[in-house]
Image (tube, rainbow, N blue to C red):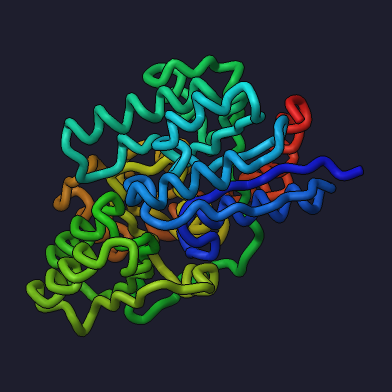
Length: 347
């Protein structure tokens, strides 16, 4: 008989973000390993949903049979602390933490403190916490009182994809990330303004829907810089791997990443990277595969882009190092195997 579990998630599972892609791949991987996985939507608006949505989400989870194994995406679980404490003995709760909610960009100190305490409380009710990077594991142990033995690191998998041709004329700078403040697209745009004297085109792929105000501000920034003819904000894209195959440089100025799946994808296709030394990014991107600059340092970001775009030998060395690093990345089957093994221990 198949082992069964419920996989609970906020919002829309089909959204093209790294977190949702991870959820989808894990669900598929567990099914391939013989698990019966039942998806359970918890509604929109997390981590700050209307009270009616939160109450409905809690009701759906509480309707699960006694002893059920339920994996809950951390975007919702971190603010379901009261429910988690109440149901901790009845259900086998597993938290999937992509990154702690309090580390999202743009929160006030009061909001950060509230989210940190709520997520800390919720995590105490979980029998297992799955994280996507060693950095997040250390963060939860150090600041959320989660014992290290209760944490399993399951690094995202990366599937093979076409090697980048690296022959754009002019070179293509590609960025992939939802248009939200944490992704640092404002830093990238300001850096591109500083290197407008050299040849390049830029394409930013990312959903406008999760934060329309930020999307509008970025579009206004492109116009203010007078770079409408060189920078395209394309919205959400299904085939980001094809986009990476046409890129000469991958650039994303994230202010924090719990892992950064798109960096791993860029490595696997041999695209040199310019990014910030933020969160888990230094664990994903080897120093020789690109340039990691300080967070919010526009001039350093621009300097790294200029170096890759004007020094062919440097570009070739970094691209080769990226491709080599990509060969060492795990596959999704490996990720699912790690999770399945730990779930079996508590099922």
